[in-house]
Length: 309
Image 1 (cartoon, rainbow, N blue to C red):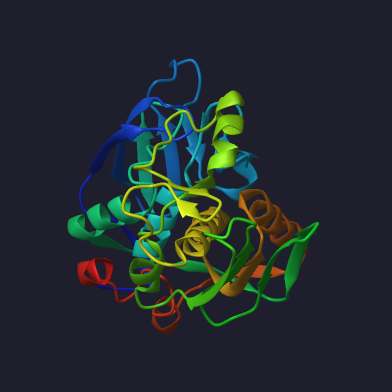
Image 2: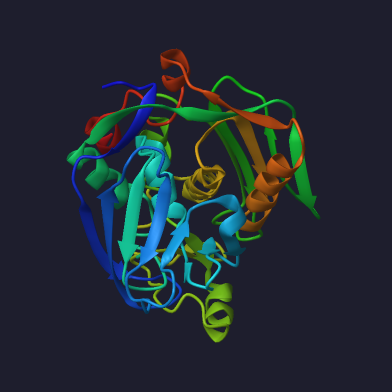
């Protein structure tokens, strides 16, 4: 398959589940889209007098409390898009229309694995239009207290992350990965969202996490893991943070050539970072991606076996 051109799905994919924060049942369909379309969400439950389409782009981000929510000019929004965005970026899908009948992408098992598996099983179709990538020209950094997010020049995409929680079951975790050659599928796709038991009631009082359960999130309490079966990996929390970062970075509108580093960062700081990149003249530039360049992106050289491993 050509890797220096754009790709879309061969066939439509269908998912059903509840939204993590809304608790509503949602049916979601990912459809093939034409070249240069990008990733666009469409709310099918919205009256015809309003636009139900929301482009998955950094400047459309309207809320970053516990998830990433995008919104259009009519106030129509789609939340918890980060896991699906990570799966699309990690499997090399550049163009897709995501249609859903509710306000939030279903959480499924709390990771990107169900989305990634279905995409790999369906396969991709080359569109024979040049693939564009965003190349970092200089280091850009944003901070908030002890938290930091930065992007700096690199030949491919790399993600480094560090977290530090008071709960002994989480503690301090750090990891860095080059995202080429199926690294996302092998190392990050199965990492589930997580929270502290002490935060659950506060979130629900604020109208959030209404669809959360021990089946779609890892819940920690002090030194204990409350979710049945425990962790999928000993450092699953930091891996999930990296998964989220990949999904949030995909809101650049294309693949990034750069090294992302996050320290105690989240959705808000990563979006602030993208806004800084796009508003600082000369910080980054779009360019056509050669075959050699495309081989260093997350969606290159992958197979279903990478996910199984």
